[in-house]
Length: 491
RNA sequence: CGGGAUGUAGCGUAGCCCGGUUAUCGCGCCUGGUUUGGGACCAGGAGGUCGCAAGUUCGAAUCUUGCCAUCCCGACCA
Image: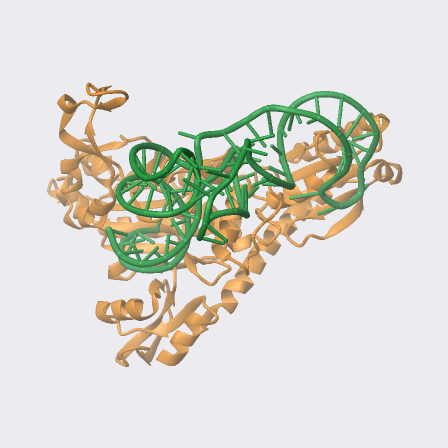
C-alpha cells in the first residue's frame, strides 16, 4: 500500500481519487466508467443503506424489486422522461453469443437479435408504473409506498469514482397517491428523511430546496433536493425527491376509482439517493492524512493497536485488549483489534488514519502497568492517555463528540461559504475566488439562468425552502426579483 | 464527440530526442532472521507479449503509420 497521498491544495481531483483508492473504498474496474467497491467501502455503504432503510420503513414504506431491463417502448411513453435519459442508455440487442465462424474468439450471434431491444434501467419509473397499472384499481389500493434497492446504469461521458460512475447503487422510492396534496407531502417528507440522514449520520449539513425548471428531473412537476458544499467550494446534489404530478399515471394509464365512483389518475412521487453520498462524505470531511469517517456510519468505530515488546508481552496485551473489546461491544461499538504481527504500530497508525477510523486505542506494557490506554481521535488528531476505568463509556462519549464536532465543523465551513452578492462583478469575483454558494437575486427566467451558466459555469443549485422573500434586482439582468436563490459551481 | 496528455512488473517510474549486450530504480510481493510507543532493518529471491498491429532496419521500448485504451479539460449528468 502506497504511503503518498496527494495533498488537497496541490491537486484536489487527485487528492479525492487517492482517498477513494488508497483509503480502500473502491477502485476503477476493467469496465470503462465502472468501479469496484471494495469490502471496506461496501461496509460503509451497508451502514448507510441499513440506516436509510430503517428510516424508510419508519415512514411507512416497504421494499420490492423490479427488473433490470426495460422494454424500449416503455421508456418513450413519457416524453420528457425519454428526452432526459435517451442519450445515456445502455441497450441490449441480442441474447446469445457464438463461436466466430471466421476465426478465433466469440461473436454476437446475428440470429439472436431481440425483436424489441431492452434498455438497462437508468431509473425505474417506467417499468414500475407499468406494473402499478395492474396493482391499482381503487382508492383503497392507495397510497402505494414502495422502495427498491438497486443498481442503475447511465452511460456518462465522463466518470468519477462514486460521484459519477456508469453503474451505481442506489435506492429509488416510487409512490402513488389519491391526491396531489398527499403526493406533495410525501415528496417533502422524503426530502426531510434524506436531510436528516445526511446531517445526523453523515455529519454533512445540507440545504433543502427546489430545483428550477431547467434542473428538474426528466418527467417531474417539481424536484426537491438537498445540496451540500464540498471543501473545494463546489456544490454537490446529495439527494432528490420528485413530485411527478400525474405525468407517469397518464403515460401508463394508471387510474383508480375514487369514493365517488369516478376514474382518476393517481399522483406520483419518486426519490433517490445513491453511492454518490459516499463521494460527498469523502469531500466534506477528509484531510491530507486521509479519510475521516463519521462514527455513526464508519465500518469500524474503533481500532485497537497493540504495542508489543518481545514475544512474552503478547499474551498479556492480547488478554487486556479482549477485556476492552468486550466492554466496547457491550455498548454496541464496532471495534477491530489489529494484532497482525506483519506490520508495525507506526504503519498501522498511518493506515487507519488513511482509512478514517474515528478512534484508535493503543495498548502497550507501559499502559498496562499504569492502568491506562492511549486514545487518539481521527478528526482532530488529538492523543491522550486515559484511565482504563470506564473505558467503554469514555470511548462512547468520544464517538459522540467526534460526530458532533465533524458536523459543526462542516456547518461552519458551509455557512462561511454562503455569500450574499448584489452585483455581477461581485458574483464573478466570489465565484472565481472564494467559491461556495452565492445568494443572489434572479429574475426567474430560464434565459437568465442559462446565460449565467454559460458565462460562469455556475448553476442555480436550488431555491431554498421557506426562502425569505425580499425585493431586489436580478444580479445579471437587473430585472425585479422577489427572492435570492443559491448559485454555485457543482459536481 | 471536440481539445490536450499518457501507455514499460501489482503500483509509481528511468531509458525514447540521438536504434546496439541480459530493460533502470523505488514501493509492494516471497523466504530466512532481527524487530515492534508514528509508515523497521539485514540477507536472499520471484515477477516483463516495453498498450496492440504492421512497416523501416543486420538489429526497435526507442523511428514511421494505423488502431486500442486510459487520464485531464470541455459538452452531458445523481
